[in-house]
Image 1 (cartoon, rainbow, N blue to C red):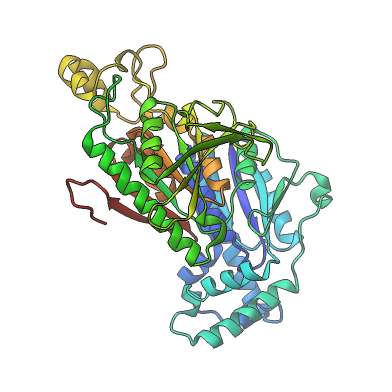
Image 2: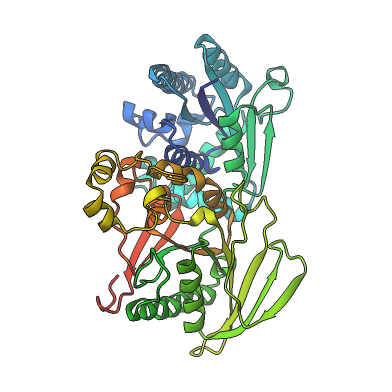
Length: 479
């Protein structure tokens, strides 16, 4: 059960490959070895790129044999990779697997290899808008390169019809009711899990229960510059200027989103740590945007709210256990107005210790420069393995520890339809950036994320678009 084979199920253009990429990114970031084996890619590598709709018809007996051969070969490659692994690992078998006979073959092959658990993930899509977008994206794959768009669309729809004629959706009675499966409807609208057990499979199911494909932006920023962030001190003039530039940038981006009719993603949620530098940075952003001087506090689910005057400082509103959405935490929103546009703006904000900086244990009260200078033996040990090095002392953490506690934050960022601004320290920024961009774990401790630079992440079906904008007055502002 330590080796899991996730088998995709569904018609073409139902978001299967997009879902596999998201799962790969999440599992890899969580520290699990994971590999995708795509039957369509293998078919094209075997010289069958550009196959027309006739290739996928059951009436074409020769092509049917070739399709079965390719699917079986892809499955064997996936199983061989699993058998070479010695620890907990996941393989994703990305194919249509649309018939009960094909799924039976997969189950029987996994039984022949002890310790491999097959889990089927079926993607069902009947939303016309989602389907239309999926069809459009399909026109860009290798099968339709250099083909007239209208002809490509017609051919692809014939391919879908061919699959529909033999498609058998998974039901509870399949395999005597013992089949592990997860069904996704319209990529996040509804999720059904059946007979799913075990830590890893449950984690995958929980993750898939929170994903969606709606466009939105996630902004990452470090806190503003302080005279000495390890001790109580004042924000520097440079830090105050950055907060002003950041407020203006966010207001302009949100206004452009609204004008473009981007709906819910034009709304903004702020997530931050509980350190004083985070709250101060947020309050400076609000005051720079023209704070109205009042804030409300209540339930994220729309429960009763109470109004406080004077915009008191934020406190920890989230529990370290579980995900943000699970705990029923209190939400504080701050109403502001832009002096430039005259429009009322709201900045709902949540703070949680999950977003606090990597805990340096016995060395938490001194800077990195002081550790380097006064404790060279500790610094040398950190440099040997910066990803796994854990600071000595109570509460001391490593980067892998930070990744572990950020999982609920990742779930919240995936769940949110609104755009999100995350205010935190450097280590947390690096870990979040690595998740969305798919960077390797080893790169995380050395990522360059300068002070007073805003990183905008826009997750999409072909990866994550990254825009870095320097809002530092000393640099003059660059993008």
